[in-house]
Length: 190
Image (cartoon, rainbow, N blue to C red; front, side, top):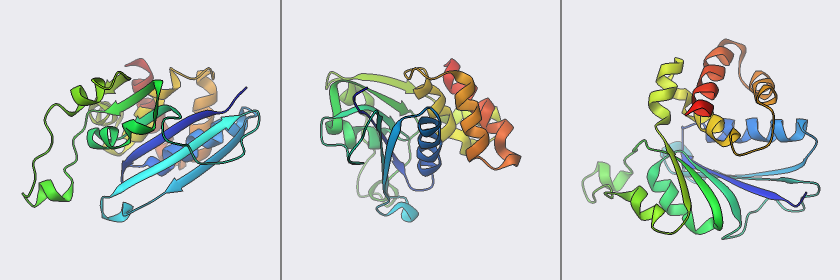
C-alpha cells in the first residue's frame, strides 16, 4: 500500500495531539509503518497546531508536502482555510463548524471571515462539515470534539470500528473512556 497522508490541524488546547496519538496507535496496531510529526507553533497561546500522520507499507518521512494530504481533519473553520493548499485535488477535508476567534478578532482589529466554509468548498475539494462541539457535549464533555472528529474520519478509513474503540482504550485515561467512546460513535454516525 502506498503511503496515505492525514493532517490534523487546530488551535492549541483542542486536543489535536491526543487525536494524532490515537490515530498513530490505531495504525501501528493495524500493522502499518507510521510516521507522526507534530508542529506546535504557539499552541499554548491559542495558535495553530499541525500534526502530520503518514502510514502505509513503508513510510520514509513524516512530512506531508503541499498538495499531498489525502485528508485534513480541521478542528476549526479558519484552520481549514489556512491549510487547504495542502490537500490533494481529490482529497477530503473534515471540518468542525465551531468558530474560535483568533487574537485579531478578539481585540477587534479584524472580523471573523463570513462564509469561510463556502470559500473552502469553492476550491473544488470535498468538505465534510460536522458540529463536533454539540456532539461532544451530547457525549458528556465539550473537550471530546477531537474524538468526534476521529469518529468522522473513521468512516473514510477501512479499519473496523472495534479497532478504533481498542485504540481509545489504550490512549485515553480510564475515567474518560466511556465519554470518548460515545463521542467517537456520534462522530461516526453523523
